[in-house]
Image (cartoon, rainbow, N blue to C red):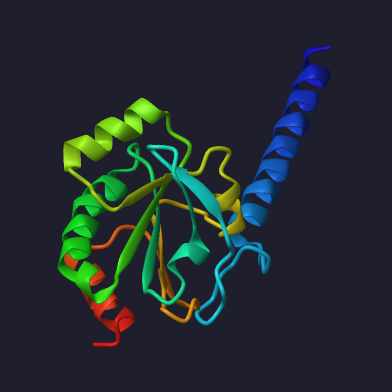
Length: 176
């Protein structure tokens, strides 16, 4: 009875590894043309509320260069980037730059405390339910989209950036 049970356990363990490996592989390496934005694409529209309940749409910023950054206070690279986006926003806002920082479904108090702590005054939007996150095909955080004034994607960056990295991209975005 013991040997038979041991064989069944081994078969189940192997099946779990195969199914798990398949699930992870298809998630990480699958080609998903629906969610993958490429340079020149028009980003998906969205309508999201800020912390005061004001609703903003991407189309509200038509004709302006826009940075759309998906972030969370739980994400260390996101935490490092947010003050850098603030400095870039202050530096380039007179040239029309808009920064839309989309929080990934954290509670209101957490987001408010984060914004206050870092004294952020660009648009902080809430993606409750993560619908916008899914429409943009996010796979990790932070992810930042640099959108030209013609409404087309210049570049998408997955992972954290230094202030210098952001500045170089903003200069290209503003065509300086």
